[in-house]
Length: 218
Length: 291
Image 1 (cartoon, rainbow over the protein chains, first blue to last red):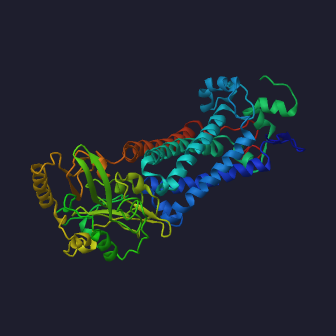
Image 2: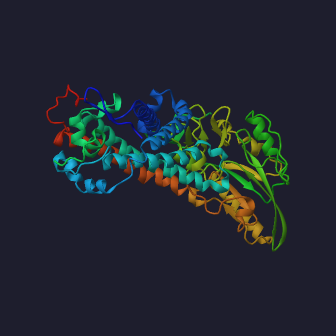
């Protein structure tokens, strides 16, 4: 669990050092996997592999970096798994999703430390990572897959691509939200801090919990 | 290996069409299993011509040299003692790359130029461009490409493309003492094969057949089988084709995926232009709430 707390200067620690580092281990490894994966996905993007040291290097490192990504995801599960469970608050928030996308945040029900969108992203990356890792291991060593079990290899090739595409969808939205839309979000995962105003706007139940005030109604 | 850019009919993972403009007859190897005596001269000739290091043989309980082909053993006679209604059959079939007209390995390969098909039908691996990903292994319906863990490349029969390109027949053909192996144009070989099947049928092998599977567009290696209704006894797949998972991945999924990724990028950009950022009231970009 994260150690969210109010800092002496009045701002709030949203992500501690470990949480931030794990996020960036996962982020950096995902970007490498994305670039080397896309290079082999279509010949139009093979130049990505050339830029990253050649097809052979990409082929060699991709699986190892994949294991690193999965390790980071599992650590995140340890850190955030409980807080990522979908609750009634999230279901209610989901119904008001239209307001969220239109930046009418005043019409949204207050949420805890993570909103439903963040939670779905977490589970998408978690389960996507699990499928990508299992299928990836099979594709790592195709020469050891017995001919009688070749359907496993065929299935892995297909599922690896499908799972990768789904995580790419989540990744695009995540990066867009985290850098362009939610101002202050990027800083929170770099330096860990957010302002009280930010917490009040985006995660009011969480703010109320850590400041010790009961849930504040608008 | 040998081979000219002007003779390229297909090239793996290429965003531009192959350059082949030269006409060439489609070549073909004929294997008549009914006249094969299992001498393995073709195995030796293959090793010698291609300068492949010797493999330590493995006793598999039959006359077979190895359980399966290896990165430096591309031509393997498969032996099988097969009992059917007509008695015991000692079957032997020379196995190697089939040189499919629609090659699954080439279809699955993501490395530009690592697998090519020449106008004469030969499917050839270009190890120079191979990245060792092993996708060809998942694309092949015949269990042919073999990965070398030391070089991190994949290898298989080249149909002696270096010999064929200078007008010679493949080394295995040259070595065959019974002429159960022959080499020529696909038309010629099919003619000989069909004639042989007629002979076999007349001498009691009523199910004799030519193996030239249409699921992969036909093959550059056609096989005459006395027991044409017992493909499994020869270790041949019944109706080989490129695995459906590979086809699904390379065609519909690839285009759906590309459009989805592009749509995602354009969509988020449009969203920003329309709705902009979520800013905390009373906080400027330079303050706590800023990026």
